[in-house]
Length: 278
Image (cartoon, rainbow, N blue to C red; front, top):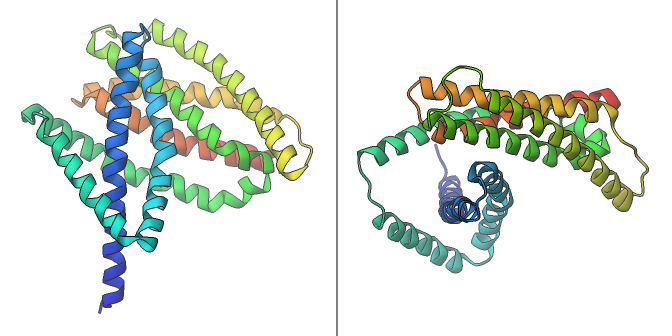
């Protein structure tokens, strides 16, 4: 028998999630548009900047908004409900100005299916983190670097995924292997090596300032991290091709899929390297 109190808690959680989702969607929607349009007008390839910017913004606002609405619901319910109504009204205004046809409905179903499947897959990453969190935290430097590893790996994968998707639509990829993409992945792998060094140095500084502990460069990380990003970027490339051949729009499927998979492989990578140095 479900108690009234438990039902009330479930309803509260549902309303908090809905409110957070409404405002997150609005912010990310316009952020995505700006991150695509502004670089394009400046002569910059949107594929190289839009996906990393949007995924980073999502990381920055999703959890804070959710937690913020939780505290607001507990501390000032009237303001919370007012914002809930405002979010619904703004969403209706935006949707009213949008033309929803057969193509849009197909995209909606496609994206909903992909996101639903990825939500299940992303639980693997959470399970891995929960299972091996002690190993990560035992290595002080990886407890600092872990978010940066996830973010940079997913961003590099999403850049290659977005670029590959665009090339598929333009008919530039006729064979399984694409020379231009191979060159780009090689260059981004070098960039990943530089990012790895910077992440390690920043983590050293943070640990020294906060814990007054002396630590050095993590050689296994510096050697293996470029290989991780290299593999993730090639995975993004082949995912885009695979989605296209399955009849799915790679624009809708590639970036969310590769960022989710990058989280899983980055978590495994962090656990393995942290285990080597602990």
